[in-house]
Length: 238
Image 1: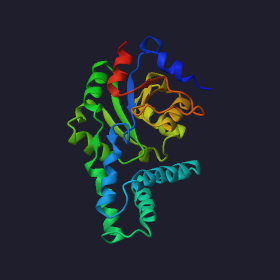
Image 2: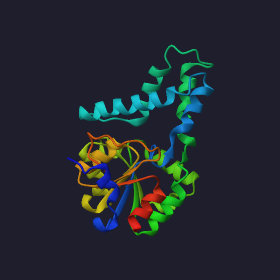
Image 3: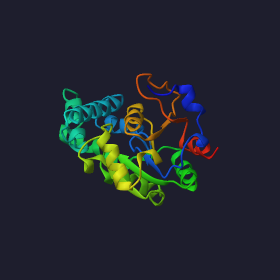
Image 4: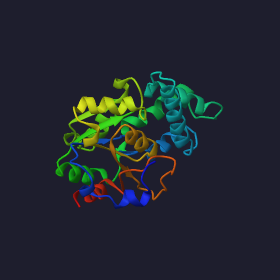
C-alpha cells in the first residue's frame, strides 16, 4: 500500500537519498495539451472531443501493453482519431482533418511553469531525462521551440523499449539507459497511473498537480506532490 496523500506532501529532500536522475513524462507534464482542442474546431469538430480522443488513445495503448504487444503512438493516434471523427460533419475530408489535428503535435508548447522549473531543478544537480510513450521527435521539437533542450541529458521513448509505461520494463529501460539505479531516480509526471507504475518499478516519484485534483486512493501515492515544477524544486531544495 502506498503512503497517504498527507505523508506524500510532508516529505522533503531530507527524507530522500541523493537523486541522480529526474525522469520526466512529456505529454501533459512538460507539454500543454489544451491547444489540441483548437485543431478539432478547425476541422469542424467540437473541442471537447480532443481529451476524449487522447484518453481513448492512451487506453488502447494500455490494452496492447497488457497483452504484451507493441504499441506505436502515431499509429494509435491516427487510428483512434479516425474512429473519433466518424459520423461528424467536418469541413474537409476525414484524412485531411486527421492530418491537420496530428499536426498539432508539432506545435505543442510547454506548460507555463516549465522554463523556470527546469532551470531550478537542474541547478539542484540531478541529470534531467525524458521518458515518453510518444515519439522522441515530439519531445525534441517541443523543447527546441521553448529553448530548453540544453537542460536534458537525453530524451527517451518507450517505443525503443518495446513496451509502454506503466509496464515495469519501460521504467527499467530508462534506468538502464541512464545507467542508474531506480532508487536514485525520481519520475516526475502529471498522471497518477505513471506515478503508480514508477513506484512499483522502484522509483521515487513526484506528482505535478496543477489543477488541485485529488490523487486516486487505489494507486500508490507519490513520494512528493507539487503544484508545479518550480514548487517541486522548492520541495527538493528544502
